Image (tube, rainbow, N blue to C red; front, side):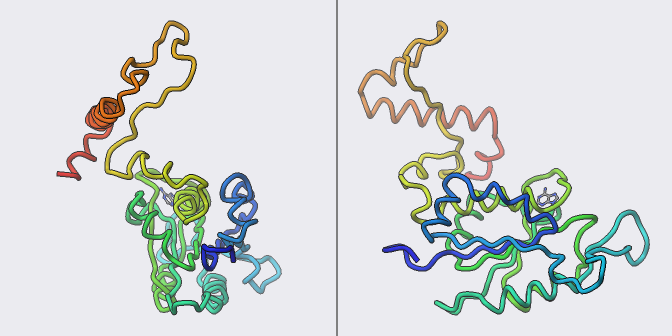
Amino acid sequence: MTAGTGAAVRIDVVSIFPTYFDGLTLSLLGKAQSTGILDLSVRDLRDWTSDRHRTVDDTPYGGGAGMVMKPEPWGLALDELTSTTPPHSGERPTIIFPSPAGEVFTQATARDLSTREHLIFGCGRYEGIDERVFEYASSLGEVRLLSLGDYVLNGGEVATMAMIEAIGRLIPGVVGNPESLVEESHEDGLLEYPSYTKPSMWRDRAVPDVLLSGNHKLIATWRRDQQLERTRTRRPDLLDDAS
Ligand code: ADE
């Protein structure tokens, strides 16, 4: 608990590769954990197995390539993690399974999830998790299957890292200067304008004159035009969404 920010946001991650998440102890999210804004735990799914080989996968019913994650360890993991959801508001935990078959994770998703008290990420591997786990999980919390984009990763770990970073930086107090969150790509549905710093001339390339003019109104108009132009050429789909 930190003065003025209320209770920590709790994030639990379940994975068979917990060391993937060592990077989350660095930088702003690492600091948020040491100051108590963020309560992050990474757990090994194999700790909820009971056989000698700590088995988490088996062959698919109906045949086909690859292996499927068994439901039993997931059930026990979810039972344990949801039974300790912080009780401040009676909010149910949000249980996220990264999946290329999920809805696309966007800045709006990150904003929504940054307001939750308890997020649980379940990282699938192999050909995925037994479908009954998702049904069971919805009896314990709000289940979201979320995709990073239209490509396939080897498992949910990298997607979970990306989502935790996008969500975590929106939790109040994580980013020191909250104004830096306002003028970013995707916050207003457009791509960010270009940025420059000193020197004003570098390898025969000049900083646009308008940025040296001191005329704030002109600078704001130029930046907006740059945002629109970049979005039109690089991401026209975003302009379609806005209209
Ligand atoms: N797991 C594998 N591919 C993924 C993707 N594109 N997004 C989220 N999780 C995934």
